Image (cartoon, rainbow over all chains, first blue to last red; front, side):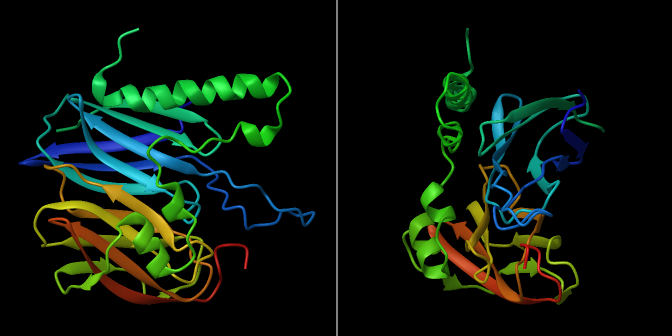
Length: 104
Length: 159
């Protein structure tokens, strides 16, 4: 099964810019389906990024984050070829992770 | 199994959740499977006013600041996908949170930034209707905020 995580991280100069897209319904719990029944909440709660064994970013998300969420941030350091581990866990305990390689 | 200390707590939470899921298969109600991930600020995410969400997450009042740049569209034709970017020139930023007071739950996202991570983040939020978006920046242990209104013509929360 393909990963739910797509990440593009580019090391350049002093910082590494990270952009990630996660495939996830991010159901808020307030939307009804076609038969008028509420779709239960299902959303990512925690998304983390680790570089060289150090946590560089933690996202705590609620149901107001858009479907197939996007995130962009930058951290100091990082070199082409370094590993960046991306992990998420949702409110139902489902999770996924991926280790990406920094581009130069 | 050796687990590095930094990820140990997170991994344990995954293991705990897997354990619950297994129990669920043995006949426990499905609701028992859902467990909030360790470290997720559960109380803050359940508040439906800005003062309550600020109190739950920070326990202190917001100081208005012109050192925060909040980029949002003036008008969002689709409230399901509203691009939001925050950056700040404030020093020693440890956390950036986004609040949408007119949504069912005020707190939308909260980002923890360790030393070395730039105080800037972009993401996309759902907005149920026209509302302010409040960017809250924790800098040197105090919290600073700036706000902008986004006019939503089609709500993104089933409205």
